[in-house]
Image 1 (spheres, rainbow, N blue to C red):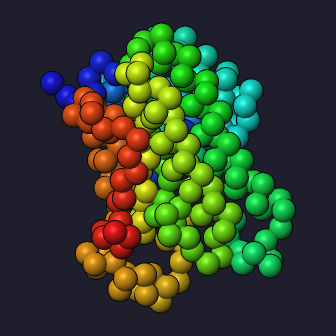
Image 2 (cartoon, rainbow, N blue to C red):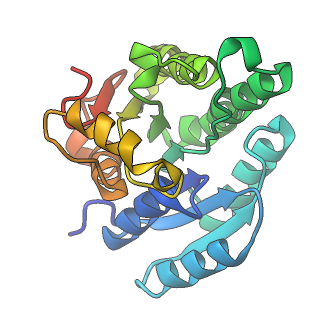
Length: 248
């Protein structure tokens, strides 16, 4: 039996990068997959087709995770289309990097809304479904910089640190109803975003990683697979790094 057979997962920000890897990994392990992004574009259409070809049910949704109303509608639509939501992966996120002296109020607000408020929006909405089921696994995408900070990323670091506090609180609130909540903290993962970095910057970062290499989206997806499955049935309120020992 596959690890997620019979389960339905909802993943936000899943048209590319880490979110896409999670969607494919979940589908390969038997989960039906609903996923969202801002637009139902070519990337979303291709992923939807790819997932359905794996023999599970998959559907893409255009939804703004930073909008409270849109998040409520997304959960309602997914629950109606799939009949259940067993796993929620709050993966939607952006960066707007700048030193504090150059950071605009808009860049601060945008990052906090997309990265942190979205987690509140989706978790608040999905708890209604999970409370009725008396089961659920909520996985929130934080970052190692949410634990350590990083120059030029005060907005991003603050949003990811907020996710950690939120995760621990929700694990305590919902644990009695058999709903688990954990956070994943990736380090330097090769995605479209990190691919834009100059080679010398990458080399400098890799020297600080004990495993001497970058991570892959699949490395993060495999941890999410564990946290979404019954293998982690007694794991809740935790923050787990995927960083090659860069942050220990």
